[in-house]
Amino acid sequence: MTTRLSEEQIMIQDMAKRFAADRLAPHTSEWDETSHFPVDVIKETAGLGFAGIYVGEDVGGSALGRLDAALIFEQLSYGDVSTAAFISIHNMASWMVDRFGSDAQRKEWLPKLTSMDLIASYCLTEPGSGSDAAAMKTTAVLDGDEYVLNGSKQFISGAGTSDVYVLMAKTSDDGARGVSAFIIPIGTPGLSFGSDEKKMGWKSQPTRQVLLDDVRVPKANRIGDEGHGFKFAMAGLDGGRLNIAACSLGGAQRALDKALDYAKERQQFGQPIANFQATQFKLADMETELQAARVMLYEAAAKLDAKAPDATRWCAMAKRFVTDTGFKIANDALQIHGGYGYLSEYGVEQIVRDLRVHQILEGTNEIMRVIVSRDMLKR
Image (cartoon, rainbow, N blue to C red):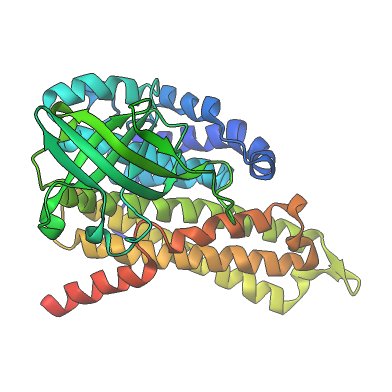
């Protein structure tokens, strides 16, 4: 591992760890059971600098790197995977405005986003376009000084509650080169939301369709030039993939810790199940796989920070490997708990449910294999 953490990074990691222990972990089961979206607690992270992790300091951001972000989301997700994942989505939306927005847009939107006076959702996926994101149907037609948007977005975290929607729409029929990015505030006439989806996991954040019916937004709300939105979206996904991998890592670590404690306490055949070699071997494999995933994640984040030419491939590799590994570790932790692992009060089944979607979103793990193999074959 070439990555070594600085004293500042260790302090950031510890700050996130303490927040997770104090404000997330004690409530994670309740939020999951009641499908409660803890906006008040989420907004507290702004005071720690976690609402604009890689946003410029001039607009209230922390100006940290992608490795810093991975450290933060790993620790937050140890307390609550679902809530940590939403904070990462808010950061993706804020980063897109910071990285590609005009000076006027940065000054108008980012101080409120980095303070979490406003929270943001990111809108790319549609009912008919998931992995094939460029096949989106949502349109934005210029009418004078305004764009008129029509269409729908699917699986949008925070939809209906978030204040701002960073949304991709087609401004021409030129495939990926015809996609543009827009900032749409809640309350805009014609903007509405579907019903809250009933999901397997991620229950502490709402997931709804975003519906656009002749939604008019000023040209000033277009991010960057026309036709550049898909490029912006793809650039954001490298970091998004690292963040979701970090959330898998934190959840898997919590599951492993629970399994280790349970194995020491659970008695069968007159002794703790930790005394049995089958349990010991499973725990050893879980620890080994988890540490390998951590090394890969940190290395990929360091490459993205360094703008290494192979950073995108490494981000895809890390996302695939860490999310697959994280889910396997959580599932193995449930197996060690036996029948009790299937009960909600032990908290392991919740982690299994929350981590499963990480193998799907931010690009399915099958698409990650496509990205990696294409890059390999170009050489």
